[in-house]
Image 1 (cartoon, rainbow, N blue to C red):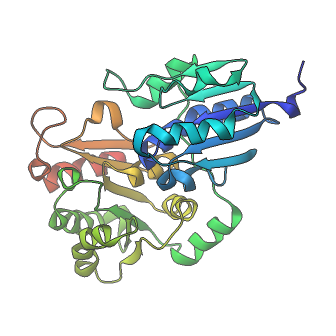
Image 2 (image 1 turned 90 degrees about the vertical axis):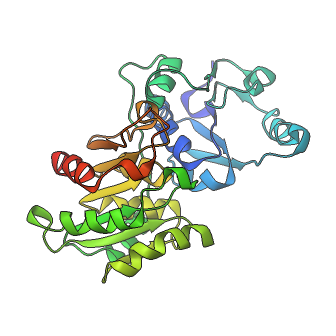
Image 3 (image 1 turned 60 degrees about the horizontal axis):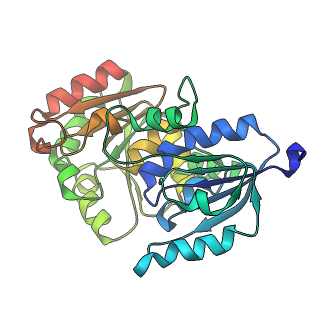
Length: 302
């Protein structure tokens, strides 16, 4: 029988930041249950930073989709030399069946009822379902402390991976001005977004309209983003990877939904809430979500 320090765990997870963060709850549960295990994580390049600070991480394998599914073949060649004690495949592929493994968990994807983090926990047999987590290093925490002041900061996430998820910029501006009173009087805004020209363009109107805003658009690693989010008094954002990172960081998080399904992808954390545009679930225009409705949800959360 293998000693605990020789245990190997393989975790195959998503190419998207949000889905990768959601899967971190079950990975952390495994890590806590097997604290001496050597862990290998396989994920897409965009999600790499979600796992880079994971304690016990032995290998972080980045793989991207290729023609004729060659990415799976390349991944298999990296994994086949080992005997795995536990293989968890969040993507539900056949990879787990093609490896030497003592225990396999092939978690089914696709649209179905219930919160995604709860679906993953059910597939693993974990009850209660563990909430997503983030992992940061002391250097990340120190950088966040230099970037964000000790007085209240309201984080705003005005971007998303497609335009149908994006709440109008003028609504973010109005919401911040309404929130920066009362318990959050004199709060500074911090604008979060990913790298690239499209993210910068989507965030630009909010940055321009809020003097003194802390510009965190595309300039940080994901662990640094997580540390900065952890210093915010509140985060308000569209359904995105940033929203899931904020919730997993323990920050009070308000997720804004319209053309995505809150019943499956609402932020999962200790202090979370949602504001949903009126209309068919997952198909309602974001423009229908009023500032007043988002403000009321934020105040209930606070």
